[in-house]
View (cartoon, one colour):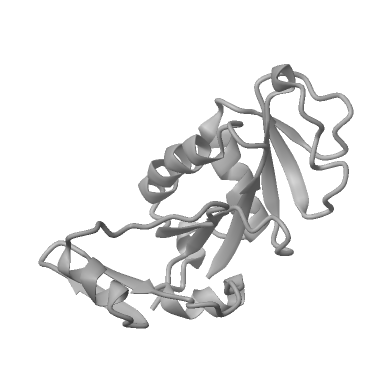
Amino acid sequence: MKIFGFAGWSGSGKTTMVCRLIPEMTGRGISVSTIKHAHHEFDVDQPGKDSYEHRSAGANEVLVTSANRWALMHELRGAPEPSIEDLLPHISPVDLLLVEGFKAYPHEKLEIYRPAAGNPLLCLDDAHIVAVASDGPVPEAQVPVIDLDDIAAIADFILSRTELTPAKRGVA
């Protein structure tokens, strides 16, 4: 499984980029999964639901399933936050795993950058950022700059960097 990530300041459009790239990649025959790091406490479950009650009662894991999907919730209960390596075994094999967040992990990343926001460029201090997608000129970037709205060009770049083509899929 190839891994490619996205970096950028909050509000820069990382999630929008991932959501635009998924249909572009799947339309090219590339199977895609995503992993998103949340900086804040989050919960996919709701109070009053049986699965929530199971977790509240102390279950370490609760798996909820139906005819349409399944979800596994794992409570850390004070254990350290897992690394990407810890999480990968829980993801079914695909051609490409798109990672939003996990900025300290040493995978190649595309920076989503909007000059008008006034934030500093992350690629200047992160050697794992291999390109910038921007809605304006970024003359100080020392990596390729791709138009933020050119999803096909961004997909081409990612596929080139991951050496992934539909002919090289190899997913069992």
